Every structure is written in C-alpha cells, then in structure tokens.
Image (cartoon, rainbow, N blue to C red):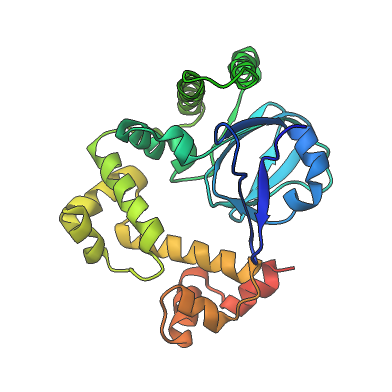
Length: 297
C-alpha cells in the first residue's frame, strides 16, 4: 500500500500536513489517483504546510488559489506556495502529476533556504506562478521520472541529497522557463534579498505588527532603503505590502471560517471592530459582511 500523503487537521479552513513516518517529506503522486481518492477534500478550500508543483497534463480546468481563478490548459505547471488556500475544479477529471515537498526536506543549509525564498516560482510578487511546457514535455517527463525512480529505491544515506538535487534542477529549469514566458523579470540581488527578508517577517508578524518602522528596525535597514527595494522589485511600498497581506488574510478568514467580523478583527490585531471594518472597506471598497456574502458559500 502506498503511503498517505497527508491527513486532515480539524479546523475551519482544512489544513493538510505530511504524515509522520515517511522516509522523506517529499513525494510524487498521480494527480488522477489523488483526485479519485480525495476528490471531496480537494474541491473544498484547503491549505497545506508544504509546497506543491502540479503538472496538469491533460484537460482544461479551473483552479482557485487565494481568490485568483487560474484557467488551466494542457501541460501547465502550477506552483503553489505553502499555506495558500486553494481548491481544485469540481467538474473536470484531471490527469497529471503532483510533487509535494516541505521546508524540512529542501532547506538543509542557509543557501538552500535563500534559494527557495528567492524563487519567483513560489514568491511571485505579481501573480500565482504558472508556466506552459508544451515544448518542454520531454524534459519535464525526464525530471519527474528521475525523481520517481529514486523514490522507489531502498532508502540510503545518499537518497535525500540526490532527490534534493533533482528537485533543485527542476526548479532551476522552471525559473528559466518562467522568465522566458513572462515579461516581468526580477533580477536577484540585494534589493530582492531585502524584500524577501521583509516578506518573511511580514508573514510571521502581520497579525500584530503593521508599522513599517518596526520591520525596518528588525531588518536593520532604513525606511528609505526598504522603500527603494520594494518599489524596485514590486512597484509598491512596504506599507502597501503590509496592507495587502492583512487584507488577504481577512478575505481568507471571512470566506473560509465562521468567525464573526469582530473575532476576525481581533485575530488581525484590531482592538476595535469598527477600525477593522473601516480598514477593510478602505482597501476593498466593500464591508467585510458584504465580501463574505458575495464570496462565501
């Protein structure tokens, strides 16, 4: 019997984690098989604590990631960051493969961590990353086959490093293809490093920290330095990044939990519910209740 990839954590927004006891927190599965076995779970909004590379080989479908509707064409690779909320198409039978991995598996050194954090595949600051691989199917077939073949071997002291090298090559080829297909090219360097460090802090602290100054103090940079970096890399200010992260989480909680507006406001660091309502309406031109009624089930 093949190992189960993930199990459910009981909460409002279903969250899936790797099952303990597997040789590696790294797996390739048939998308059709996964869809068949976990159809009811996949078509509901859910999030995972691992990264996903989804290869849609056949069929035209729709995929939702954090309120972004993605129209999937045959031979599309979709890169889903950990903790993103997604759901699969309910009506279309899909075929392909899905590759899953965690930080624990990939980030064995500081260089590994920096590589993954700077990858635009999972940190695309403009959109959810997809690439079309019609002209590269043989390349990706080989890359996935190398990984699948290694996973079937008896685990030894070399396997983890071999798998990680295969995965890194897959990511490098994909970044090159992404850059060839998309006009927005972000050069890696000190500005991007600064933005990534800021974003990592922001992901951990946005619930209670919304002051740009507090972040620059932790990053040991001036507000001007951070402002220049985010404008150059993302064309928005640090304050706009903070607001966007808070609003994204507000949307997630409004649509995918039964928490009251007051409770969500408290969760996001607003002591007064009216302040949260005003903040949300300022950035969305609609109230939290109106947004919930529009997008909630």
